[in-house]
Length: 96
Image (tube, rainbow, N blue to C red):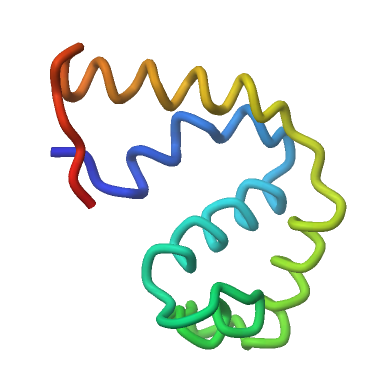
């Protein structure tokens, strides 16, 4: 079994900077756990944050990630497919 954090670690180099990778992690986790509409505000309010982070800090980091972070979406999707084939096999099914 693969945890979300283990899954996301495979993409760390694709975001080049630590703050952009943090934004990607927050965004993916927020999409999975936040109820209702998936807005940046809703996502940041739904997450359990480290004690030294505030909602405003996370909101700003996520806003910057969405608006300013360049990444190669084709490369990310290719890597995702490779991970799923390794984890599930070519005939596997992923249920979330």
